[in-house]
Length: 296
Image 1 (spheres, helix red, strand yellow):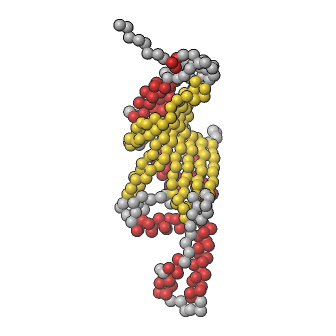
Image 2 (cartoon, helix red, strand yellow; image 1 turned 120 degrees about the vertical axis):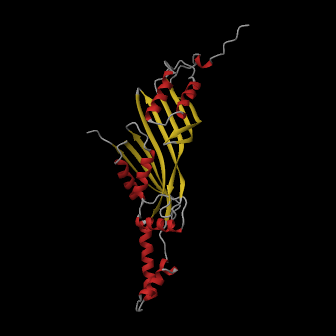
Image 3 (cartoon, helix red, strand yellow; image 1 turned 60 degrees about the vertical axis):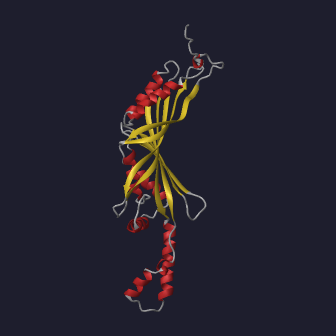
């Protein structure tokens, strides 16, 4: 008895001849290797369907090509190889290939003073495309930090000054009395407002590296108030000091991040967005900045 040939419906002609820009799969679960870590990720894989007479693409071929990602460290070269395999497996059907990978990079961060350390999660997206034989990679990274409002800090200092005047008017000041006052509730009659904030980076890469850790470190160093993991009281005090010495509006934060990213040789262009989730207002304060490297 002859075995029946399995039907290939995708190979049949389309009833409506029309090319499509992107066809593929979203949310594919897979592991990837980044900086020695095996991370859980999801991938969106697709190609263009340039042959408008074709019914569809071969999605299983895209899925099988993704197996390369759990065998080697993730690099632009590996991404290009995967995309080329997408196209090779769709010769005559597709000219462009796309791959988006979403994961959370885990970095162990030390406390500011104590010997404690803890893990921080950084949402990361890596987008690669091979379009008209041109390849490029983009990174999207979210970096959380704390921001203290300069205006609020100035208003709080004024209230503390006024309280000092009220408490010590026409009084001969003694060092011990002032020291005691500064350590009391009256010494901090008002506090500036701070909020958890986010720097959202969209970076166009050049070169053969994925500088995720480098970019995160550069941005956190520029801002000076990265959110913490495990802390003792000494760490919390050091964090309060860092916030007091790094007062910033969202405009200040955007400028700091802009200058930090420009120093990276791995970046060809970027779009950054900082969001201060206001604790005073019911809305957010936002600033954005773009930059493109111009060839000499």
